[in-house]
Image 1 (cartoon, rainbow, N blue to C red):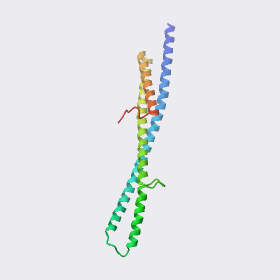
Image 2: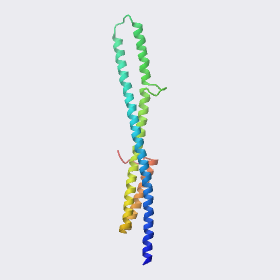
Image 3: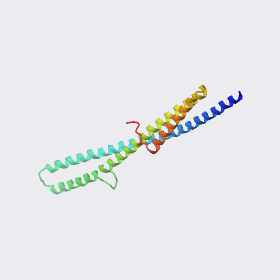
Length: 185
């Protein structure tokens, strides 16, 4: 009868080891998920700020263009040279606001930066979704493996191990190839 007891102890140790490994991978998944979530939030804020600056440049450009068009409609007067000089200054300002590679603050550069921030956000969200599903698989795997210790139903430990493999695959996709497996859209 003592041989049976030792077999149960050995089985429990293997289940405990499986639970420990699942918990370790769960910790990795949760940590990577929080980092991805933080990256997504930061990139979203960056994109919003850049698009707001882009819009401000657009509004200022529209205002200057409107004033320039109104001045162009005025009959030539005594200050024709001053008016032409001011219109030339406005044209330079408008060109600078459209594209300013030196500072990266032209509409063209702001648009490119905002789109890059959106792509960074989208990548982080793809990763985050993979990590969240991986975490769920690890958690359910832990519960099933734990239930095997209580019930003695060996299929539960296999199901828990299988979910651990699914979680590991999702973790790998999230880290190495988040766009390869589309889970949410």
